[in-house]
Length: 97
Image (cartoon, rainbow, N blue to C red; front, side, top):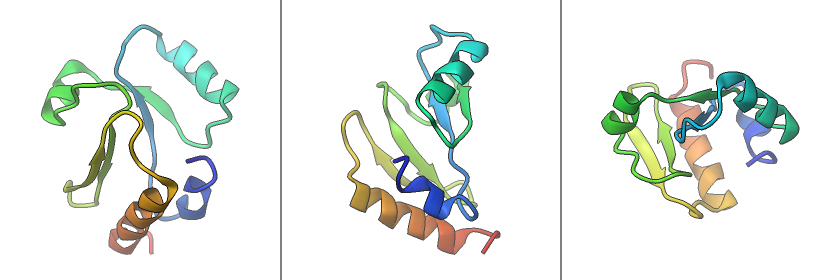
């Protein structure tokens, strides 16, 4: 993902969101820096997880500008080719293009 996301950084907003709640935000930000993530790291509350039907860690969700989920994958899913395709869809729908 770190190799793909920068190509779309000007048109697609990307966030890593912790769902476990075991770390505070300071720890999450430090983890993101340690992993050299080029994207912001945050935490979702239970209501957001429920709304998005997130049941397992490492759920990947892509949401377009209209709030429509255009991609969903679980733990260990999502190839680089799939992500490139998803980011291309999101970029075409972006007001930043």
